[in-house]
Amino acid sequence: MYHVTGEYAKNNFSEVLEKASTEPGGVVIVQENKSFILISQEELESWIETTELLQNKTLIADIEASRQEYDQGEVFTL
Image (cartoon, rainbow, N blue to C red):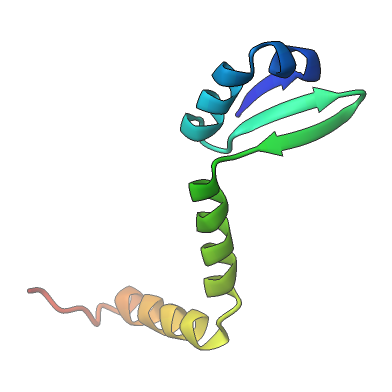
């Protein structure tokens, strides 16, 4: 993650926006001992989708069952 002060973000807004869209995890902006995260819309949507998938108990159970099958050598080659 890229870290900047609030003052730096204000004075270099275009650069900070570019970093937010290219840096994994976005940009941390620190202002008065508080941290704020600036991320791209694409990254936010990815986090939301991941969160939704992780809340799907059936999907998680299927993944775990597949891992167990793999660990036991129950695999297919294509």
